[in-house]
Amino acid sequence: MATAASDRTYNVKQHIEGVHLGLRPFKCLAQGCTKAFGRNYDMRAHYQSFHTDLPSLRSLRESENAVETQK
Image (cartoon, rainbow, N blue to C red; front, side, top):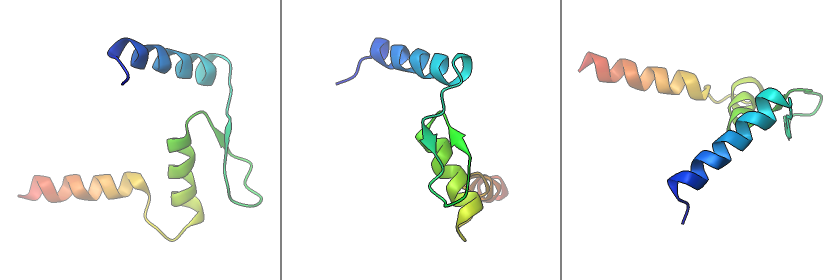
């Protein structure tokens, strides 16, 4: 089981690799797309938004929030 300290260590490592070192190990899976990302989640969100007929993860979240505020 992960502890809060190990979670923070992992987050710091991810931050340093992505922001300061510019590492982008998660390449878009779409043929011909040259985008790469520091986090797998970001790559999957990009893929869904730009390379499928599915709505983007952001638009799904925004529509859920709009429904909640109308209640």
